Image (cartoon, one colour):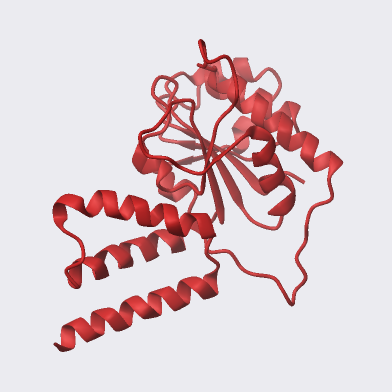
Length: 242
């Protein structure tokens, strides 16, 4: 029931942590592990720390970039313990489980965990619909990555066994846009805003970040994305004809 959810680790430094994450995942019946540019993998230390979850490591997919790892996902959630000057919509592990294991069980979902020492960067959180925060001691809030994954996977496991997944009827079903489709839209949007003179180069990053937050909250479906891309194309055509 949880095979549609990817656990994505970004630039993991210590191979032992990869093994510990695999073990945490197998405890909770999760099998889909993705690694983005790990420093060392495969590695005997990872296998040793997996303690019997070797099959999770054997099936792990390795990617060169985060964008590639989440390209086919319709819902992307980034975990972070650090406070950010820019706010993202925040959810708890339990709310994450409700979204990922039940309400969106017919979609591909990625839950991303960042580097051991610095977590996810802002431009990586830009790719996410939600920021996942694990409530803990405010005076010591640094969780080991395997412990963080264990907490989230536990909530996913419980939700998948205690709630009935919501399946939308065919007549109402919306096909959510994948991360790759949404990124293409953002590239197109930035080009169009530049063409019509709306964005100044010095402010383009902050404007695009705020626009991402607006559209990410809506979780665009493919038809909505087609409409928006059509508007952008017409705007560009009108600008060229002037």
